[in-house]
Image (cartoon, rainbow, N blue to C red; front, side, top):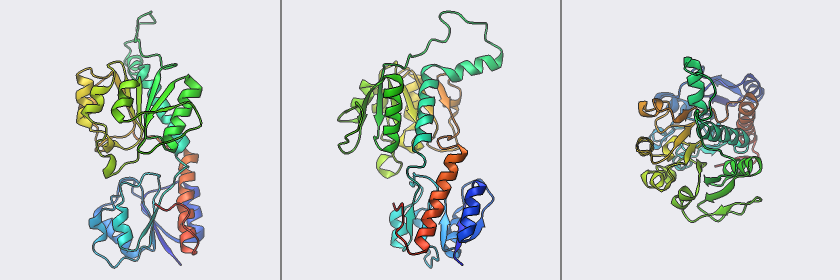
Length: 316
């Protein structure tokens, strides 16, 4: 029977589905795999279901003699896997697009509202017992309705965010995308990230991770933003030069930030933690049971199809 290794605990429904088709070895730890564990997974199993943090780098594949034929990634982002190196060693890679779109877009809107309306700082005030009651100038934030939203990366998730913002909040949408993009709602494509940063009241990053997007959000981008604008990242942490973000916040170049991902996750700089104008979430983008079940079932279906000789549903 085909042997499959699952790198983290997943919802029970997903594990049960995997065991219908495969001899499953489930790793019980919730932390990322070590290099030794990743090398062993390639040597001992026919397929592996890894996820974010399992860094299958070029070096991991170099020992050779792999039994593994498919890395069925749990998640749409796969920048933790060197896909070219995997292919060079005869290993296919798949992901779970679509399943994460709406949940991630919802988190983006939540962070937009939280940073613009100072919700995190307000909640901390109440919990500390420092709230002295309502008054007309208390904790004034940015009214988001009718403002301009700038989207960096107009893929599935970027479009889902833009739709929510336009139809739900009446926001004007401008965006940057590496190729021309036609969308089914009012939105203007601008020539550069800096152009979007300069035009927007809220800038949201919805790019894929990887070498091509590393630090594309940098000091120049923050310098282009309005001092009243807010920055939100729900994509991958290393897209943003985190030191430049801290510097921009400390200099008052931007009004605030909402972050669900971090450059050196799970490490979060103390400079961000201590700032009242920054909302910090622990990578909650897809953290809803039905969404994680959908992701897991899609990963299992990739495995099932691959090992029964069918076309791989979601190759990368």
